[in-house]
Amino acid sequence: MKETALYPPVKSLLESQGYEVKAEIGAADVVAVRPGDEPVVVELKTGFALTLFHQAVARQAMTDCVYVAVPRQSGKRFLRALKENKALCRRLGLGLITVRLADGHTEVHLDPAPYRPRQVKARKTRLLREFARREGDPNLGGAARNSPLVTAYRQDALKIAGFLEQHGASRCAAIRAATGVATATRIMADDHYGWFERVSRGVYQLTPRGVQVLGER
Image 1 (cartoon, rainbow, N blue to C red):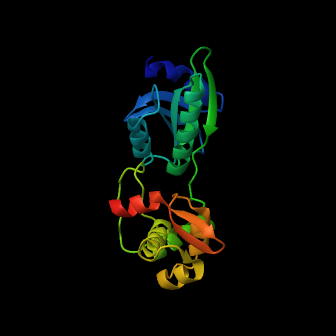
Image 2 (cartoon, helix red, strand yellow):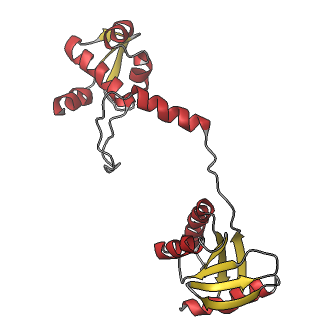
Image 3 (cartoon, rainbow, N blue to C red):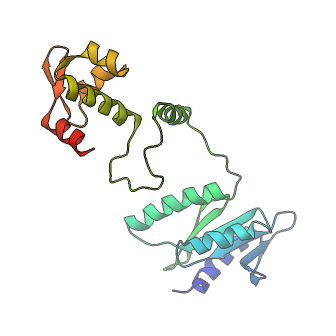
């Protein structure tokens, strides 16, 4: 497959909208001009690649109307890539075109437009709450997520486990008072890590797993 195979369908698409289209003008793969409108630039590639987006972003120095065009393929893998790269194009202010090479059918999935991220207040609140509750900076930025991260929740659970290691089975009120963890009862009841077990109503102790984890620290 060559990039040149994309040119005739893309040219036909733009010509059908009243543009005059020419290829390889300066650094641009495709340039389309229509009186009274911004010039349109299209970068052609045989697939999604970082180079494609680098080139398209560079063309934005010429015009706000920059598209990327790739061949449309079959299968879920391409649909997933299309969805992900459509989101990337939206963030970069780029348009996105796919071309079905079997019959030359073109589809415009996205037009260029300024992008402003939609912030989700609840996510921002969770982010700042975790930042404030985290004691110190126990993790290494960029570390693999397949190893346990030290979150504020884990730090609270470790405080509770440390208290139980020293004092044995204890009442929730005593644990809360000694550790300062207001959610101690909920943490022990949920027992996400398998460290705690209920002895009787309002009384918890460490499990063998909890003892092992503390011994490995």
